[in-house]
Image 1 (cartoon, rainbow, N blue to C red):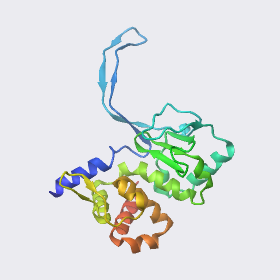
Image 2: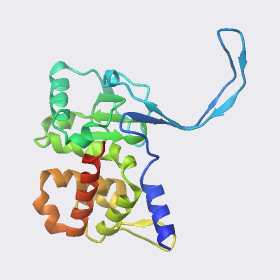
Image 3: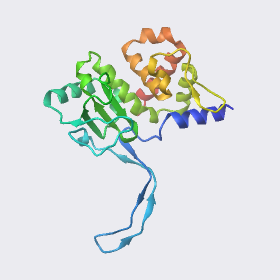
Image 4: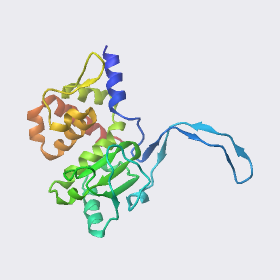
Length: 231
């Protein structure tokens, strides 16, 4: 049972791991084509793989990305907004600053006027909405979104330790069941969201985290220590 529990939670909650400077490219079908030398390449399936992200791709004024559940209008960055985000990125905890972003985009309300930002771990995109620039806790917002991106590279045993400590269980259909005691209201949405809330709170209010759930605090601290000590 522990093995099944481990597999279901880690497989469902965390994406395939790539290095912090890489992006995961999903499996895709390649149509047949002709090379420049005239030779023909037959149609074939290209396996999913990790590809290095170049730092020069950070801030973009447009994108070919398609986002699930939200339909933001992508806008051009102005110099002031870009400077604000750059300054916040420079203040990230060292282990989170290792994670490259394929694109940093400037969007409108993103489906909710109260939504300051969103991240998409699979394609390493950070999307900054209008509300972000009205918030006082900009660093906490970026930490939260970068935690979503970092999740896939965390040691599976440490992930499971956090899952247990936070209070997640599985029901008779092997679906994750949220803890009765939630750190933040949206922690119930997924293990991923709960994890990012814990990482954010660790850097914003450690005293509260230690009081709220000492075991989960220790699990998060162990994860952060392991990432900070990585070579």
